[in-house]
Image 1 (cartoon, rainbow, N blue to C red):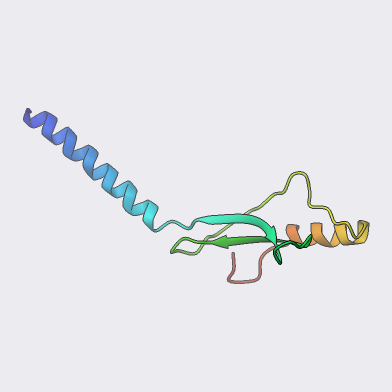
Image 2 (cartoon, rainbow, N blue to C red; image 1 turned 30 degrees about the vertical axis):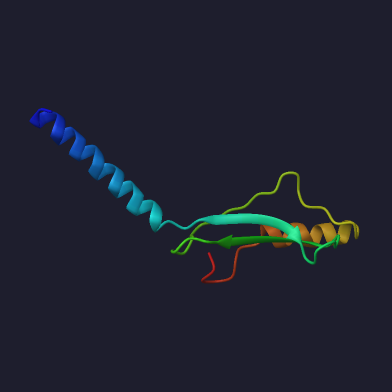
Length: 91
């Protein structure tokens, strides 16, 4: 292997190492819908960050919009809650 090949291989290895290190400290945001209690028809929509750093500027869209079996008023409340900004410090 020539010196040029070794230098290129070292450069690629450094780039991969740097990428892996950056990925280790990234926030990982997961959205999930699950039953509140097993066997229940009530579901909970949750968004959580499983990464080691704080997630910022997280935006979530649900298409089609979430609907309730409790009627239009409940649908409007659901839409407002999913369109609102998170509390201070939680973004």
